[in-house]
Length: 298
Image (cartoon, rainbow, N blue to C red; front, side):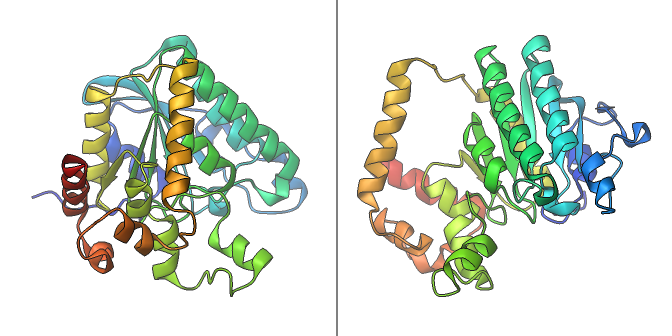
């Protein structure tokens, strides 16, 4: 029996190794090239020789893919000039080479404060390159299950992706809990209330709202299986005006259905999940089955 590997606890390189077919990964801009952040160096701050992101090509179940994996343990996976350029370059390569998909292993709190302007520009360049890859017919899948989640600019990037695969441990949002608490106060959002944080930003809420397309357990093998399934079954959505209007209508309907909701528990109760208080204790498969049952009944 193979040993279970926690996706949450794994490093970026370990996640790539468990996701890709054995010995298929080729890294672009590896640490030996020492592409480090010039901004961090000027501030005498620690640097990483890959600037906190691993990019390269591989196969997954025999299908060619490009992969970018952020390292949440370095600066919280935050995006700076070099970090962002590596992801943007990978997406631009995807538009040229047209692999089966691009896999973004997102683990980021947003933009690097040390490189604020450069980081913000990098995020905009990533978004532009992502949409160009999609326009070229290449789907982009986000995988979220690390300790930093997907917040700030990378939260926006994630919501542009064709598929969003999350574990309950993964989190997705615009402003992180600590940011909200700092700006609005602990009475508005207590970032130390871990159960509240995960009910508001965690994978089960995002899956219930349709923002995550697939929910898996915190297991690297489960993330790989979900990526394999997405590669096999994904169909590119039309990018015409009618589809965009339909998506906007769905968001408007969701807002009307949950106008004053402030907690995932209220969402689970409103959509009719049995025993909503027990949802945080459910395995991913059980939770997915309950959502599927609700969809059938509707």
